[in-house]
Image (cartoon, rainbow, N blue to C red):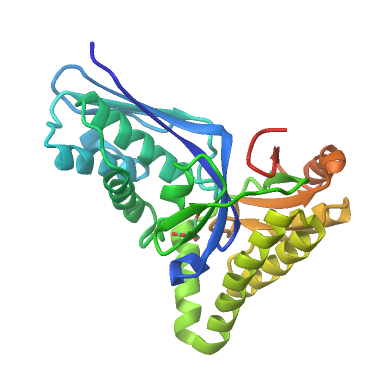
Length: 310
Ligand code: MEV
């Protein structure tokens, strides 16, 4: 039986979440140890979907499967394939709704699995456009950062739907900690838009400053300046809180990381829950991870400055 396969990794936004939606730059790393994998094959007549959250007919899929379903249907439309008899299965170890790119990675894996089943090789631009259609269903008006950061296997600077690699030379590591609180990216993006409408000038000043921090942080990454990077991360967390996208559990973990000796820490991704990231001296990673668990993190991951597990 012919099978199409696809896979995409998780991503870690270091700087620029939310402000990328307004054309500001962002910096992200690939999280190579976390992936979504999709397989596609033909069996019977009824289109089906399989995942840890729902297995059954695609037509009866609950809301949680709306975005994957869009990825399947739009890919078929783009390549001229039939829905009848198609089964798509998605599995992976990226926690959902924690700002680590699970929705974009699932969509990217599906687009590849379905197109490869039909022996079609999509261009980078076609792939990106299809993932973006699924991401629109998942959370409204995505910048495209997640779509590219879950596909490109190196640190990137992202702005206005295009990405360039960043030559990271930082001799420190990152510790990521999950609050266990589900954060809605759609809600968070809507909240920022609302505050921009209500208080345009003050909100725009915060957005501009966060955008400037992204480029200053890139210099820190390229010149191995972990202390400076840490200060910028803590500054970014403060500004993101003022944008209204933090959460008490995120603030607690940021404080715990800094209290345990991290150079700095911030929320990562959409916020309102999800994860924080701290920049830490390599020898101190285990102690910071333990402090984060003590402060309530349900899971931690330690990675090098280019996204490989420690
Ligand atoms: C979500 O991972 C990143 C946001 O900046 C939204 C987006 O870029 O579309 C919050």
